[in-house]
Amino acid sequence: MEWQNRLKIAIGSAKGLAYLHEDCHPRIIHRDIKTANILLDNKFEAMVADFGLAKLSSDTNTHVSTRVMGTFGYLAPEYASSGKLTEKSDVFSFGVMLLELVTGRRPVDNFSDMDESLVDWARPVLGRALADGNFDELADPRLEDKYNANEMARMVACAAASVRHSARRRPKMSQIVRALEGDVSLDDLNEGVKPGQSSMFSGSGSDMDSNSYSTNIRRFREIALGGNDGYSNDYNSTGMTSEYGANLSESSSSGEMAYGEGRRKKPSPYGV
Image 1 (cartoon, rainbow, N blue to C red):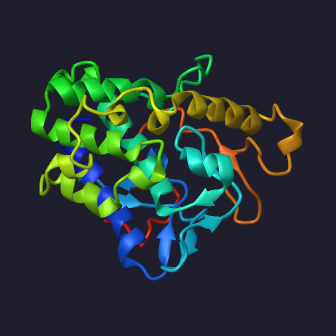
Image 2 (tube, rainbow, N blue to C red):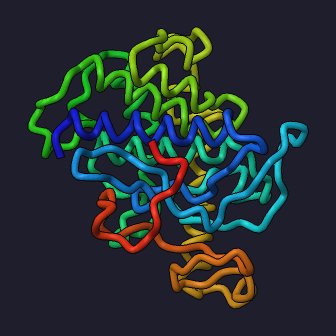
């Protein structure tokens, strides 16, 4: 996939999520943002789809307490550990999707020993790339260096901000849209802190608690594959979603976006 199409998908899906979070009343938290739930037409216009796990949230609620449901590799750490759901949980999942677009890697490598997720691997690399402006380590080799460096910097900065361990320090989707389109300074995403000046860009510190996230990833993988009978009533490995029972499905094995014409899901009215 060419770089311009990747950027177009990122902006289109970000606009769809921004609408759900900030323009709908009540607000809609999707709860299962991943590549397989972004449908594309033949012009690579993105549509946010599959609202089977979505939750409504009034403006007066700070969070929604619910069972943990979604796809591991995309789950926000605070939601995975406590079941407290906010729109910032969707922001984290969107950040993982941005990392897929940039790197061409899967959120979780099904053939690895699960010691490291894409988020864990990317966090220190993101910091280095933003500090020195060199994206060779991050960029998907299949791009063959054919990308706009400024656009890459914007997408990398948005991904780094979106996957922060601390939910309150993640930006809103409207901020991400403006950053991806180049309408705001990237410093606005980083609270004025330059890359390399804070632990928010490194692999250490409470904001980048990679050990905790890796533990959660391993735990949820075991649950989804049926390795923990104590959770068998709340999780299964079928990958099917239901509003009546919790499910934690594996991420798409292909790691690719789904084309609208090739899927049976009805496109969302909230698509962009």
